[in-house]
Image 1: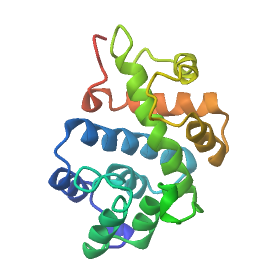
Image 2 (image 1 turned 30 degrees about the horizontal axis):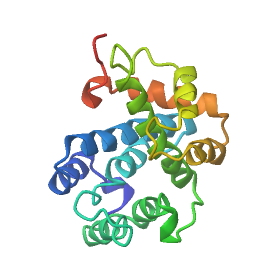
Image 3 (image 1 turned 120 degrees about the vertical axis):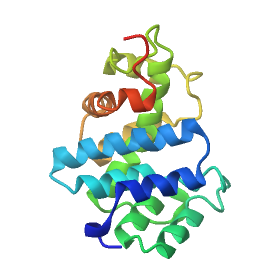
Length: 192
C-alpha cells in the first residue's frame, strides 16, 4: 500500500478489529491527533502520520507481551500491504525492537505516544475532567509526582521532546493543543 493508497477509514477498521478496549482506542485517537498536528506543523503527510499514530498499538490488546508487541502488528500490516514507512515507524516506537528512530515521523511517534497518554491522565484528574483547560505547567507539575501515572517514564517524556527538537514546555503545549481538536472523540471535553 503506497502512501497514496492509505485510508484512515481502513486503518480505523483495523484498529477496531483488533482492539476492543475503548481506552486503548482513545489512546490511538490521541496519538493520531498529536501526529496529525505535528505533520501540519512540519509540512509532512498528515494522512500518513495520522494512520501511524492510530495504528501504533493496534496489536497490544491481543499480544501485550514484550515478545509480541509491536512485532505481531507489523506482520499484520505487511500482510495488508502497508508500506515500510508505516511498519518501520511503528516498530521504532518500542526500544526493544532494535529499530532505531531515524525519520522525523519515527521521532514524532515516540514523542507523542507517552505524552498523549500522560496528557490524557492529567486531563482526567482535573475538576473539569477536560483537556480544554489543561496547561503545560499542570502537566509538568504532574511529571514531578512519581505516584501519578507511574508507568510513564518521565525520561521518555523529556527524550521525546528532545528528539523532535523542542523544549519540553512547547511539546506539552503542542500535544495539548492537538488533542483539544479531538476533545469529544477522546472523551476529554469533560464539563466544559
